[in-house]
Amino acid sequence: GIQVEQSPPDLILQEGANSTLRCNFSDSVNNLQWFHQNPWGQLINLFYIPSGTKQNGRLSATTVATERYSLLYISSSQTTDSGVYFCAAARAGSYQLTFGKGTKLSVIP
Amino acid sequence: GAVVSQHPSRVICKSGTSVKIECRSLDFQATTMFWYRQFPKQSLMLMATSNEGSKATYEQGVEKDKFLINHASLTLSTLTVTSAHPEDSSFYICSAETEHEQYFGPGTRLTVT
Image (tube, rainbow over all chains, first blue to last red):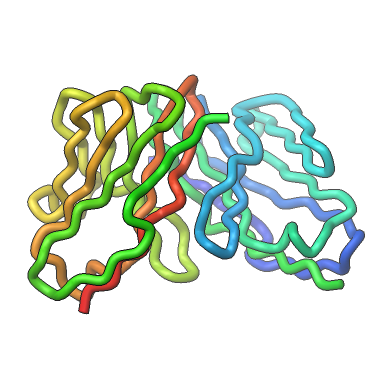
């Protein structure tokens, strides 16, 4: 199956700083999603982005499908951004998502 | 946006009993739903794909007789953990797919004593 790798595994930021999270995948995809898992376990959809660039407030994401990677940008980070960020991808022809191991983000005041 | 609910959010049961978890898509119809399992500080692992009106497809290593899945309607899938044991304790999360995007329920924390 498809392999999904995220980096870095852990990230500590000062409030107000910017960050970039990376997701590499091993195969062509027809679905790539970014999620934020809150402390209660709920997965919050951030982006559905199998290709291209999207922005939503302080967050943006870019997927370069031909080079098999996706980036999540967080600007002007806030303490409420803390949590685990997951990238998940489904290979072409499938709807089954494979999750990366996540990036644990801690934003300190 | 698309909303998925799960019930119960938390359940404690005794070893040997069965537990049913419901997953509902509240504002859309979902031909396909998925069930995941997440251990503490780990990622989500797909357990099975649930298709409305047909048998579920289980991932390798997932016991289909232990984890019974029923997808009786376009808005409801259920996961029954049969003869639960302490090693089945985990966080179970469902998702529903619409327009190629998956939306997740809030999860069910199962503790087997």
